[in-house]
Every structure is written in structure tokens, then in C-alpha cells.
Image (cartoon, rainbow, N blue to C red; front, side, top):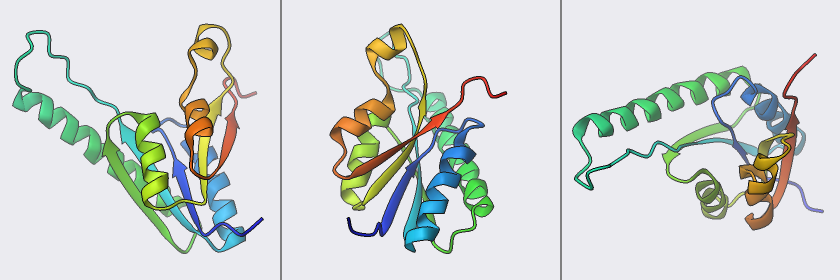
Length: 148
């Protein structure tokens, strides 16, 4: 196995993102790798009348991207890693993570995984989709749903 040189850490903006990013930062330090924090804004304007996107909808999307950039910057500052980059895009989370891993190119994707049951397990998850379509190794960090 070769060393990782470019780690893509895909995070949502939940409170658990620190758990996932910390694991990715530990690996980046261990391998001397570049760490890329990545978030996808999945805002899709609802267009019931099949008309053009309204300026207010574009402003909301821009606001979501701006807030996500701020959150990633703050998260990057908390991590003790020499080389941290961050990127926020809009689109489908699953597709954008895979595309980013290809375009970087990433050696490893670190992503959070919730232990879901029932219908959400049947329908699949982002981590599962990334695991099956990634062009590189994937580490799915288990996130406790009900921490003790």
C-alpha cells in the first residue's frame, strides 16, 4: 500500500463534522498528506410553475454557499494540519464527491456514516454510494446517533 498524499474529507455541516474531519486530519498528519475539506450544498429551488429561477432563490443558494465556506474555514482552523484546503460546490452530494475525488485526484475519501436502519438503509446513503463508485480508497467514519 502506498502512502496517501491527497485526502478528500467530505463533511456535512452538522455537529458531527468535527469527528469526521479530525479522523481525516489524523491521517493527513500521519502520511504528510494534503487535506481537502469538501461540502456540497444540495439546495434545489422548487419550481412549481415551471418558470425561470427567481433572484430570491439564487440569493438563498449564494447565502448557503457563503455560510458553508465560513463553516469549512472555521473547521480547517480547528485542525492541526499544515496544508488544508476547502471547497464548497452545489449539486448532488454523491455525484459531486465522486467528481471531486477524480478531479483532485484524491487517494482517500473520508466521509461520515450514520448507523441507519429500516427504510433509510434500504434506500441507501451518501457514504454507501461513494463507497461503491469512488476512484480511490474510502474511509467511512461511524458517527454515533445517540452519544452517551
